[in-house]
Image 1 (tube, rainbow, N blue to C red):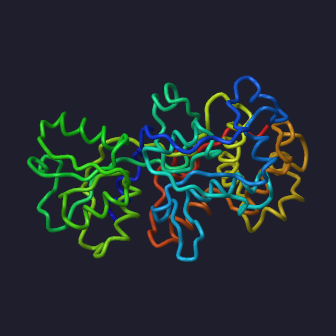
Image 2: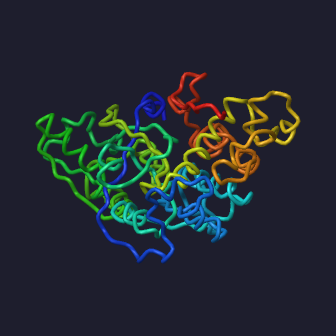
Image 3: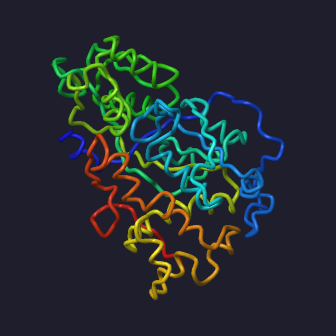
Length: 357
């Protein structure tokens, strides 16, 4: 845990698309110029509003980020950003249908319209933002790629993997970063690749590889699910920076603006000292910044084709970013992780919202 706190300052990874998914709905909007209309006409925004439910792609197997509880309920930081969008649109954070997607199918699911958005520990990279045709909302978690090994493995650095094997999920930037780092160090190792994360962690737990690499946040979360978590540790090494956040299809401005500003609303709420416990009272505030943010005055929401009080709905139903972080990863969770760079900018972190004006 101490290693995590010292290393949380770096940003995270995700995967590159390949496999095809099911056919898109007939009303899937490619977006184009139509997606920029304030009314949401021709945009996925209108499709979601007409459906009355958000379809959100998640990982589904990472405690603290997206995880299916015994009763079938989804929880985690990524899940809460799906819930925030549903709350903004429908005043109901449970108006979400979740789709578990592995690393090779997630981007095809977005491009094909199988899901409205992706909130699945996905790293923002130039190729994904351009050639793959995705649009990245603000970063919701700054992470970095790490390596997990057995406490008694005798491995203390990447150089110690000479002649040894590393489990990694295929189709991910994690796999590419691992190759780059080992090539840079001149280390000959054996990558053991798997189609999905569950298979990779199972192989690692069975001792089929000496190391397991992924985002540090994922390694910490997954370690808690291993038979003997205390027998595993993260090396003091960071292989990349990994900015993680929600993703939408490209060229649909109205829908992208929706996901983007809902995400910013959780950050801005914390900047304004608004949370789920005081936001109702704040409706009576005389502070013009708070009144605009909550939709009491002005037309910031309606100009986007959203309910004018969309930010109020987000904070009331889901909370500000600090609440989301603390219940899933921070002091109110099983992990107790310091926020580090995932603090708002006034507390020394990287989270910063443009003005709601």
